[in-house]
Image 1 (cartoon, rainbow, N blue to C red):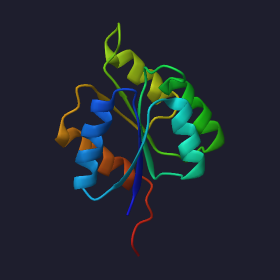
Image 2 (cartoon, rainbow, N blue to C red; image 1 turned 120 degrees about the vertical axis):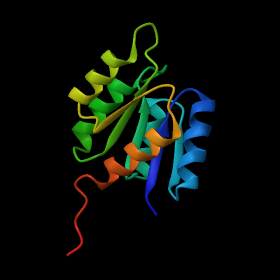
Image 3 (cartoon, one colour; image 1 turned 60 degrees about the horizontal axis):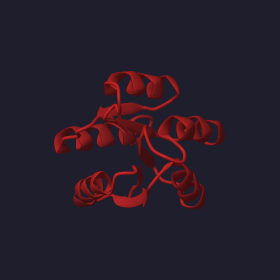
Image 4 (cartoon, rainbow, N blue to C red; image 1 turned 120 degrees about the horizontal axis):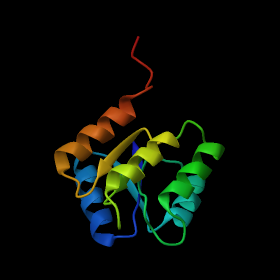
Amino acid sequence: MQRILIIDDEPQIRSMVRLILEREGYTVLEAVDGAEGLKIFREKPADLILTDLIMPNKDGIGMIIELKKEFPDVKIIAMSGGGLNRPEGYLRGAQKLGAAATLAKPINRQDLVRVVRDTLKADAPSAA
């Protein structure tokens, strides 16, 4: 079973994403910010990380930079509602730093499931 780490400071977002992904058969771990996310990932590496970009303590951008240095092959999906600005700028920046995909909040179920499946399939070894 594939493991996904959700990093978001909003408990409602974490719960919603967790519920959707668990119903799809994934094992889900949660963190409230980038610092906790890094700690959890180092202890229990996940197949995929879904991270918010705007969070207290350590934001998603800083976490992506740190993760990609330490674990260059880690698959990351960045999520953002944009804060004071529209989310597109934050999401473009996350992709430039190595996020495999992005999702603008509010997230709908179909987009979440599709992007997670596509990201996990990317670079997966093909059956011979």
